[in-house]
Length: 282
Image (cartoon, rainbow, N blue to C red; front, side):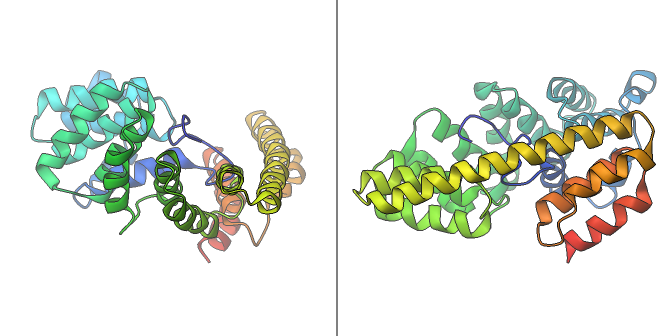
């Protein structure tokens, strides 16, 4: 988890690129999301306007095409440097996902100058500090973000930063909070196992490591079904795909429900997407 950015990871949330887009749009004025959704990747090439580049950037970001997204957001900023919130923040996110940390930090710092200590900015700056080994700074940034966490894994990264500093009581507090928020996250359980082992709590460590491995095996099976579902839908055979895809329908698991609804929606099966997404919202 430490080096994965916020890409797809079954144990936490299955449609993270969409979550990233949601956070990016949280900075934007009402109606801009609609403008972004209405633009295709190719439109910016035919229409050299900031709105066209924004729309293409959001579409690329949603589909994890981070390099293309960064180019579109830079193009939007070239045309209108005042698009700090609409373009600069998602640009920073794209650069973060590309592991271009120095560039990402510059863009996040520029956004902070505009919006102040917003949890979204604090989260990413904390992640950068943690990756670069600046644990005190990471604890400061992620601690601020945790007051109103923009992502469910904020507690995990804050706990991880405390663990790196060997502040075990604080690490346990936040990792247990992360386990409450994401009980099916293998990495959270693995970090708890590491903490318990460091404290000499051998029995609890073994239990956490075993649970982590169980979750990993279950996630691997879910990922297999997800890929097969996508493949069958790519072939255009919705009726053939349903028996496979519906294996992802678990009325008690919002992650898998969102995954299933998103897959159906991406393939134009909107009626099929409605049921799992409604249940996930519940």
